[in-house]
Image: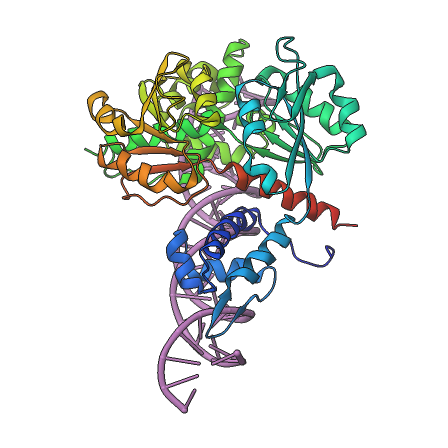
Length: 214
Length: 214
DNA sequence: TAGATTGTTAATCGATTAACAATC
DNA sequence: TAGATTGTTAATCGATTAACAATC
């Protein structure tokens, strides 16, 4: 694998989970096959784009027929690495951190939330949906001992970079960042930013832009 | 306003909050001016792109000098519509909905979380960080009476489209969607999707892709 | 003035869309 | 077979980057 395959663009990767999720829903409904045309209508994309995206990874369809829903769903799951289980820890057991711990859907999708870390003595020692909250100082050792795959940053903005550094230092290669900060990491570490307040700002922009159209 | 101005691309809009946030931080530190070059290094973009982006809205800089941090911050705030206050309601008072109600930062940025709505009798009547939880049936009237600007969908996947319809019907033109569903709305309504599990899938993909490089 | 840095045009790059032959 | 729909190449479109004259 890897090597000679030409690089898949990030734009393509970001559409794959949508395909996967939609196909999973179709599969549940018992739909057996689907054309790129129908898929495009349901997802608000073009059929051409969907076929291009899928053909980055192989020809999963059949001329005149379309795609087998269960097969395509399975292939997308494999491409996304969803057959694996991932170990996750959360830095910051505040409201967002705890909400993530409670979200049961993640476990079903292969993501195990092992523990959270905080500096607030009130929170330390608590158990949230089977995950224990430890003192932040114990994070490094925990990551190493448990071979954690993904680190979530749900700590305050000021602590974000430091937290990321500690995660990277202990072998984490994927960071899910909820702090409104621009985190710098070595390039082999993938950072996925969830910038909640940025996305509210975008809503604000479009509300204003619409208002100005009169 | 509006009219003749050529349309600003969504890619540009999505960078504006990052500029704004970074400039706000610089301003707090007392930094008075900054060049596109330095800004680009700190944000991981190119200087050229930053100048292009800003010049969609006007020439805020000065040759040989750069940009005045407070002035550019102010201009970006105005462009994003952040001088206004926005009224928000949340459909779904589960863990995510409540975490959003608790996030104090939003209020500071002009976003007032007025109320939440749910069908769970246990939650109805509770007060979360000054916001009351009402029965879902009361949402429509509340939106109309209070001229709500932004509707947050933090309800289960199955209820998402129906919730969105109710919001749109009652005049909401901006939706912040946390449900893993593709919501369809009239085009004048802006939907901002926060697809948490999609972004976990992207992390999964990159973890696997890295693994395969050996 | 000399040096720095913008605003802006032109060049490049990449992503999306269109088109259609292949084929089920 | 006829109709449908893919896989794939080519055309288009848009976004990013480079370059540099203008100018503080």
